[in-house]
Length: 316
Image 1: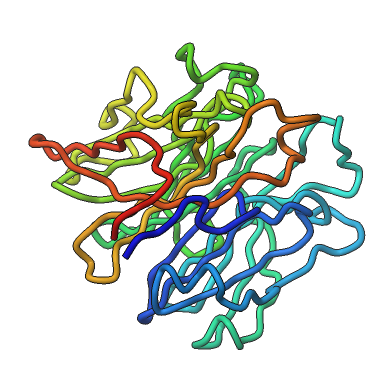
Image 2: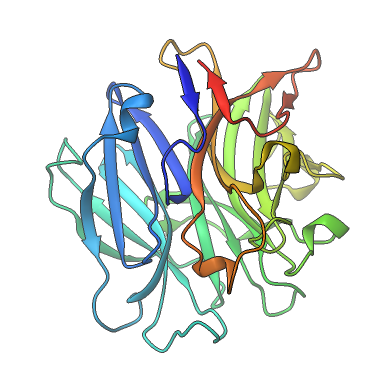
C-alpha cells in the first residue's frame, strides 16, 4: 500500500497508539480548543475515520487555552490522554504558562466511553511544561516530558521520572537533555516533543528542537536497554539532527513525532508533522498548515535507526 504525504491534513503533534486491533490517532487541532480521537483497523483508514471530540476546553480557568499535543495511552485502570493547556490570561504574545493535565476513560471503548477531566499531572517544577508521553520498560512506567526550569537557560528541556499512577510521578524529575547545540537553538532554545522506541537492546528517544518553522528538526537520545534510565549518564545524544527540512522534496519543519508499526508488525513507522512550504505569514505556531505525515524507519548494522529524508509517498 502507498501512503501519500501529507497523511492527515491540519493535524500537528500527531500521536498514534496501536491497541486492541486498532490504530488510535490524536493530535493538536488548529483552534487549540479541544481534544479529538479517531481510530481505524488500518493506518490508511485513519485518513477518513470519524473523529470524536473527547473534551472541549472550558471558557476560562487554568486549563482553558491553547490545548496542545494530546497523547492517548492505555493503562490497566483505563485510557488516559495527556495534554498541555494554558490559563485564561494566556494571549498570543504573552509568555506561555502551560501545565500538563490528563483526561481519563474507565470504559473499554475510548470512542464511545465517558471521558472525564483527571486533573493536573504535577511534575514538581512549577513552570511551563508540555509534550508529555508515557512508556513502559522492564515493568516500570515512565513519564517523559518537556519543561522550562527557572534555573536553566532556554525555553524547555527534556525530563524523565517514574510513574506510580497514570497521573502521579514516583520520583524527582531527571534532566536528560537541554538545548545546547547550534541546531537546537534556532529561533528558540527548545527540546520538546519526545517519543520512545525500544529496539535492538536500546531505548531510543526522538525529540524536536528550535523554532516551529522550517528550522524545526529532530534529534536522538539512546541508552542501553539494561541501563538505569533515570541516570543521565546512561544516555547518549546525537550531535546533529537526525531528521530535518528537505527543500527538494518540499517538506519543512518535520518534527514532534510518534512511533507505530505496519499492520503486519514488521515495519516501524514514524508519524510526524511538517509543512509543505516556507514563507509563513505571521506566527508559525498559529499557522494551521502543519500536517501529519508517515514514513518507515530503516535500521543500520549497529541497530541504530536511519531516518532518511522526508518522503512524499510511503510504500507500506
